[in-house]
Image (cartoon, rainbow, N blue to C red; front, top):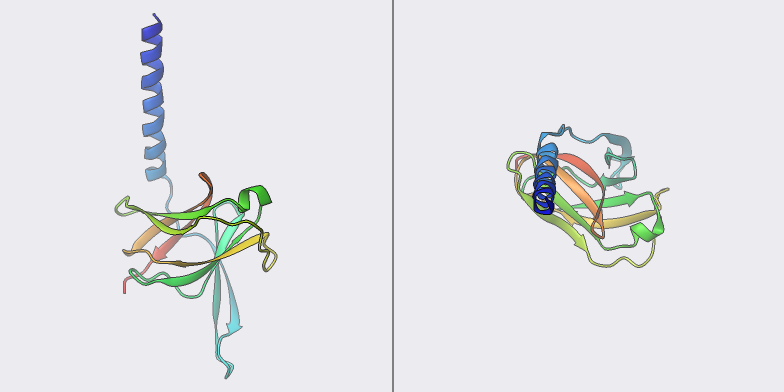
Length: 158
């Protein structure tokens, strides 16, 4: 009887794990919202747009210094709102491609000992990120081993 119950629980566990991955694949892939502000970008007064991409839970986002172009590295400034104990853990970003299910480590910062408030956020981190192929990518932001939130971006062709 104990073996039967144990096998049943194991099968349920496996089904739960496979359903979790399936749910992620089936979830709605929609480019994350942005805030756009016109700013002066050159000494002679030329204007351009500053784009801030907002994460799924409102606790994170990043400023774009340019759009995501496949295969090109660009600078992005992450901003976070939350608890110091969480925000000072090691940080990493995992990219997941909608088209191929490819998962890559996009950015990693092994240590972060203190908060760096900026522009109203509790913490900010500069990063350089590159996504290899065009299409929709979900950028999953982790502090330690825990998912903090994600941002979906549309990567353009070169």
